[in-house]
Amino acid sequence: MDKQQRNKLTQLVEKFSSKEGLNDTIIPNVSFFKATEINTPLPTVYNPSLCIIVQGSKDVLLGRHLYHYGTGEYLVASVDLPVIGNITEAKESKPYLVIKIDIDINLLSELLIHIEHSSTENNRSECGLFIGKVNQTLGESVLRLIQLLETPKDISALAKQMLREIYYRILCGKHSNMVAQVAMKGSHMQRISSVIQKLKRDFHLSVTMDELAEFAGMSNSSFYSHFKSVTTMSPLQFQKSIRLMEARNIMMTNGTDASSTAYQVGYESTSQFSREYTRMFGNPPKRDINLLKSKLHIY
Image 1 (cartoon, rainbow, N blue to C red):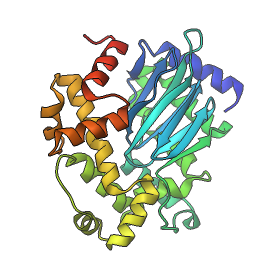
Image 2 (cartoon, helix red, strand yellow; image 1 turned 120 degrees about the horizontal axis):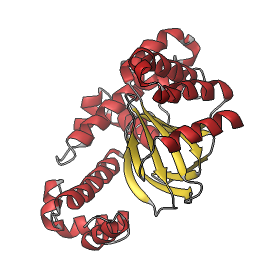
Image 3 (cartoon, rainbow, N blue to C red; image 1 turned 90 degrees about the horizontal axis):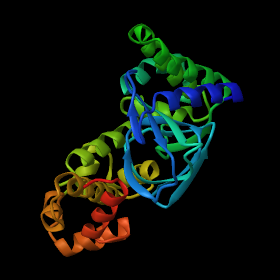
Image 4 (cartoon, rainbow, N blue to C red; image 1 turned 180 degrees about the vertical axis):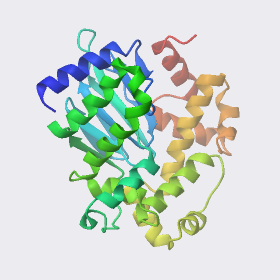
């Protein structure tokens, strides 16, 4: 992304970001994120998406792997992943600004026939999160998509075509295999993705390694190896992260206490829930929720 592209995108994202945090746009699957101050590390779940920083910088912790990306770089999450994000560069006069494009797997699949076989034949599982630089070609594609906000009547006719172009640019890059595998039916990445969806959907249910491996159509050892390659954590560690994040959302939204929430998300022991919650979020459930509400001005 050259300076002119970056400046135009910054102006557009600021113009159409009316509030702090996530701002939906009228372009399907496209949203903006704005922050005017550095935040404390915040656990969240990334859905399959392309995130482009047009101003500022951020650290993302996946398992024990730390990723840093800043202005002119993008992050791709090819599967759902529980991470801890920390905005490291933002201020009122120069806010942190991100373009988030949710990945349409069906649209991505349609493009695979246009990619050279050598870029998709490798069925080796790789981490489902990676960082890349926005080159001038990709930057121009993104700019043309975001400029549609200035001419809303053109969105229904042109947005999908422009999203296809952006996906194509990513698929032609050096991380092509990581993105392509999740859209290839029967690939190891696609099988792991289906298990991740199951764990997200049934996070409150107890599951065994045998059940998950059978669901993926793999041997136990193969499944464990591929799952850890994609997510950097074991299936049970992944499920625990999802459970704890869901518990936090429930307590924030519904005002329920730790004891009832623990059972809702699948814990049989309240004390175990509190210990693991404190380990992940840094404070016991009640204190954590009170602190979070005060920071977000939720009363």
